[in-house]
Length: 475
Ligand code: GLU
Image (cartoon, rainbow, N blue to C red; front, side, top):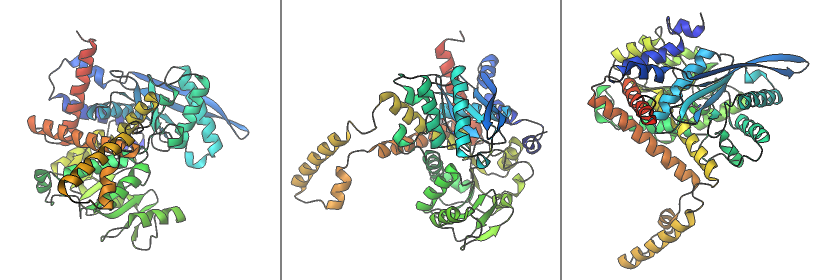
């Protein structure tokens, strides 16, 4: 039995998602066969390939799973971790399907994984493995702008995406849309501004939206608004790091940060940028001068707080610790951080859980923007920035003449500016996260569903059903 299964009781990670799906299915009246089709993983590609590392030949185990083809291309990250296994990648691919549907990103879900520990492998060897993995995907037609588009995930980032693009291009030379074969690339390699921080920023937008709903806040005994809320973040990878920064910059109080080696705590609040500087200089968050160390990092999840953000790996809140969680709101920045048993315990305690399939969809949303940019071969804002600035200047002139008043230089600068790529990407992301939140709330209210997760699944499954029916596969 794997560690995951110990924490999740008798089911696998994929069973956990099926359980959530089945709860939502009770609110949907549609033929059972269609629901079964939506649930199933369409294609699972498990591969082994040899890579020469030093003088030895190492056999590498890797996966790419395409959960759903109701929309194409398929989309989802690639993770590098020793915990990678088929069940995990299948589950994460399924989550991508539901996630994309909620935020109106027209892709089917996919996920990839390579069973390696990137911390212990040199960058030359990671490059070798990444390129070999990409060529395996190309051989089996598992990658391409209209087929399946990978992105970063746990243990991968811009660097790996660059290698994937370069390998794809060298084997598909002349493909004018090759840039769109992968997202999360560096901006200099066809990436889009705002992709790196997108998941963390999406988490921030989603939680901020919840904090403005009076009934929800009163139901857990909190005031309306994000300012002053006490937050704990577990995991300081790309998602946790950016989420912590956005919460801190916008007036929330980060009372604890937890990493693999331990956690740090200060009930008055941590200065997030100082903590990151400390982490950069010391290789660990521990011994930060303005905080107390907590040796057992899992204990940080159980501290008194308003909002808990698990932003690392799956199944960190399980049946054995759920009862000790004191947070009033849990925002799932990671994929699958709460097991179904823990979910039930927390539901009974009245904790509001903002589910992963909505809350961490900011990454794939901006990946979608990057994919569109790559296919249109032009930077966002390039065509209209100057035009807007000229129109705004004309407007301003009219207003100044009409009001017989001159506007200050600072105000002028703000009013005159045309949109840059980062402005458009962020406003697209903000709008997407706000809309998604309210669509989930509307379903929750109209069907009298008790929690956000089930409502989010209902919203998502309904959208997928609609696509299948329009495809005409099910007469
Ligand atoms: N790995 C991210 C996720 O789990 C992003 C996927 C993507 O951008 O395609 O949502």
